Image (cartoon, rainbow, N blue to C red):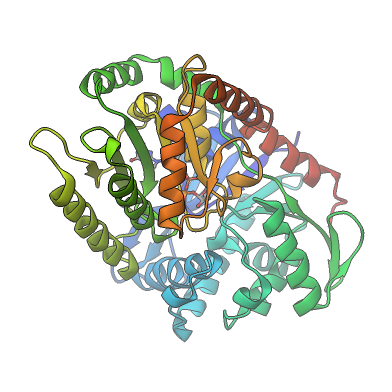
Length: 460
Ligand code: GDG
């Protein structure tokens, strides 16, 4: 295979197991092909020049990590303003939280041009380039304009909203048109792929050429769902390692007389954490047998704290948890343990394994890997039950989970009650099917399917 070049906003050292995410997903192919991983260094320079940034190179085994610094003005408009102030909320159907400040798009484009300019000289003729996520939608168009002829694929990790929502972005045509500079566009779910097909045909006059192929602006591209998975074996190994085992045993002991429910999320408004907490309150109110017993541990790791909407949700959550603990707590029992910190990755499988119910209830999510991690961490002989939002991309694959509408607090509480009371045999059956599904369509399957599709496209 040709050398793999991965481009994403943030990088991780693929040699470090704690890295998780894309590093686990792509590390193996990057290593095998002596690949290059390119992105932002994480450094914000006060007083630098917009559109400029120093390139740093570092070797991580056989993989080269190449990163660019951003000046404060570029970071504010590209990262905070446009990526996380416009694209993230709109793509998660939250027009109410989007700030369409006209200046931000210029910074977004400027940084994509900067990335293209810095990446181009590092490329070899037969490289395969794989660009990730909403920060970098126009990157291929910028690269092509500078003469890049290599194959380029794009994967969108977040949902693609319906045409009418997407069209609220003032620059929607420019953004979506730029996807036609890629050879393959990967989406998380069939729903997203359907939104893509409707949008490009309805707004851009693209022609659908049979399965997954679209033609517009003189280019033919393939756009299709490639649902991302996890590395089930890596997660299982983490589950059986000492740290996770110790965590599991400690939790089991501490909650021996109680039922544990777990939520693990970045503190993001798309994850539906306040809705989940309200559903938990409904559970305590309507099913009193759970009082002095059901305990929800909610890990909400801090994220994007300089974006305003994230402070609002933090305050809302603290208020909600405090009120429920005040109303229902006993001297020796707190219904909710809310942890606003990053918990070490090696502990997460142990916490998941100890929980009788995994609550994964986003209002909208591209995929949601926590749902898959929860299943992978369970003891097959006595597994917990996954309660999953129908609005997570994962719901298309994980049909044996108990699906809920997270906006319906009472309905969700009823389903949680059902999960808490589910007989062992049904739990085992559901878990076995879920585990089989996440094994078949794991992260290696995802990477291979995408790269095979890209390999099959003719060279542009
Ligand atoms: C985007 C899309 C899509 C969470 N808290 C802690 C922690 N985590 C880990 C989880 C999981 C990962 O972070 C979160 O992945 P998700 O998939 O749930 O969500 P996003 O971060 O929003 O990811 C999403 C994904 O991209 C992949 O394509 O599935 O839809 O939004 O692995 O375990 N890890 C540690 N401490 C924490 O406190 N160590």
